[in-house]
Length: 225
Image 1 (tube, rainbow, N blue to C red):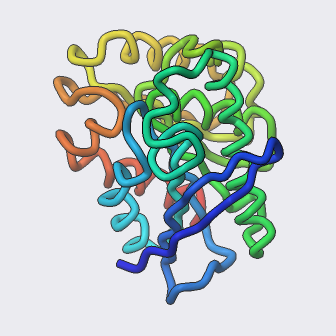
Image 2 (image 1 turned 90 degrees about the horizontal axis):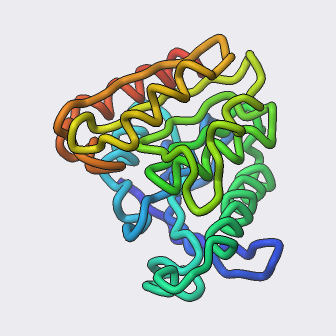
């Protein structure tokens, strides 16, 4: 699997590190393109297995280290001392990632987001800001995490947008309650809810319930076929 190292600069001049996984060759193509947003205290490396599966199905993806994490500015552990406001500024990391893809020829309609925990909240926030973003996959979001309120955000989605909500059941109770509530209030035409019992939080769902990756990818394929 090819991986290209990417460096991005946000609108507030923070340097963000990313791993780009191309589906064809080593270049960026106008293909369905995922932005992968990790949970805390993980990094972009937590997406490697999922990125490989995406590549195998014709998707390309860009996994980033959010500010204060991994190889990004103030990483690897600067996030530990972040205020809630500093965490909320991470939406600018997502914006810079999308702008990078668009500037390299990816149409906004082909960009989707996959996030875990705080990354899930950020993914939903970005999707709610841009109606052309068709899909987001939310692994273990919270109702309000660092002041990112998903109840408000999911109500702002357009009917034509799509959302996949998942959590880890009894080992992930807060997020399981969250996805069930978000599913009920989402007014989009295409929404999916999957609870994987005893599989843990965030990207641990993919590790402990590997079939969950295939279910997510099949859902994305139905959107982008």
